[in-house]
Image (cartoon, rainbow, N blue to C red):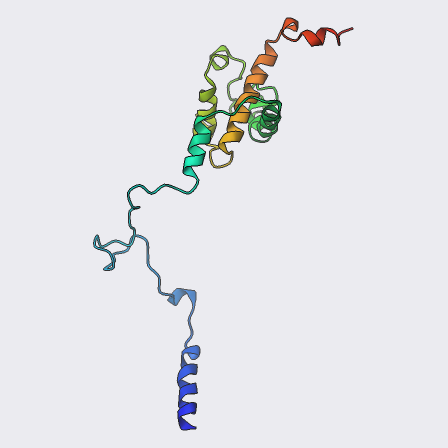
Length: 173
């Protein structure tokens, strides 16, 4: 009986000690450590380590998808969400934030941007440019390509001729 009582007291004692997050044992990332040979808690990644999904993202970024109606529709949706606040719905660089005093981005209809490679637009969306920040974390590579396709459609629509769309003649009065 005495042994049981002593055992219960010994088991209950640790519960009486107040512990809080401040008293918690932890390791600081850049604190010295005796655990590792280099003496640091922060350890370099092993050679050859890559982030999960990095190969798929890299492949998607290097290979534009086939141009389809679905891709253009997706590009239009993403453009209106991510790009139109600055670039405007028509790509003139007159979006709502420009009307609120932010600097205007260049129009997509400038000759310089009309002649730019599609990869240029993809890279700008990925890395940012000037005061535009990177959208790499917000827009997946396939959606970036869809936005690029829609930007090209915007550019072509500005300079389209009736001869380019023969079925449109039938709809004109």
